[in-house]
Image (cartoon, rainbow, N blue to C red; front, side, top):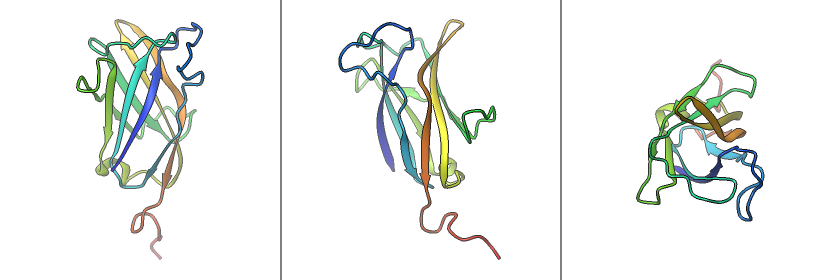
Length: 139
């Protein structure tokens, strides 16, 4: 199981406060077949926590940035135990076992009313082969 923490920043064009990532892309690494839990803290560019109540968050995994086909997606859930600005996505074994080793990509966005806002622009997701999964091709 892999738990990774990221910061999602509303892409409003406002200047970034100290401590807020200038580049909101986050590279992730997992082993094929392990459960991926992504915990995201949502901030404004000024560093103000954004309450996740009333928002719809989505994460999509694709083969490459130009691909419209989503290999796996998650809407996740709020994590009020961590704070009002935390959201969690889970990709279980049943999903990640089907990811081929190599480079994939993912992105995260939110929708409030009719507006779609990027939180984590298209970012790399590296999948390593696990012993017993995808290591040998049948002959």
